[in-house]
Image (cartoon, rainbow, N blue to C red; front, side, top):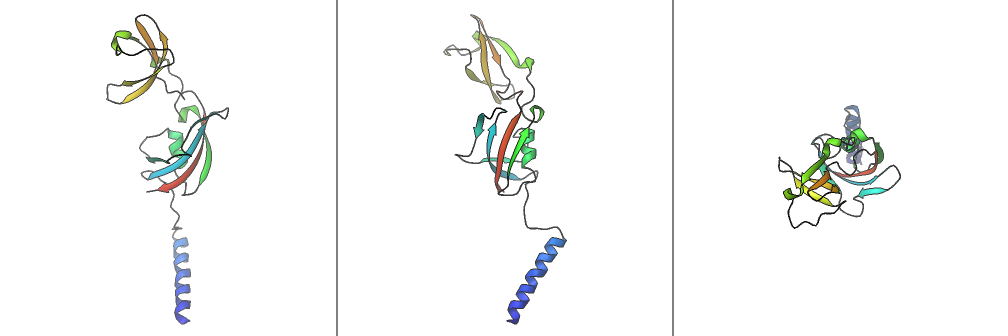
Length: 167
């Protein structure tokens, strides 16, 4: 009986020390953490443009710029199990539409076996070796006009995010 009281007293003291020092034992996501989240992204009209809910959660490291800034900032401070809905304005999402990302290229620069069509998406390799998706917006006999803007550029986005893991 005396041993049980000592254990209870020790437990109460430990909780008191944790609270006094600000150590609640609850971990919050912070820059540098690798996290996993489930999310659903919607446009202003409610159209779902992407979701992970039926599949694997999205894994990324906070602070490395792997995702749009507004999404990363929303995850910072969340705890495992937290669910939040955030609205991300254009400047914290994919930015405004850029006319300088409309390019006219000679069809001879493209592989000959491509059956090009307006609206078709192509993967292009940039000078740094990374690839981007472009959309053909106009075709002539000798040229193809492509748009290298992200499909969600110029749009305000809404995300429902659930933090499922912090590594």
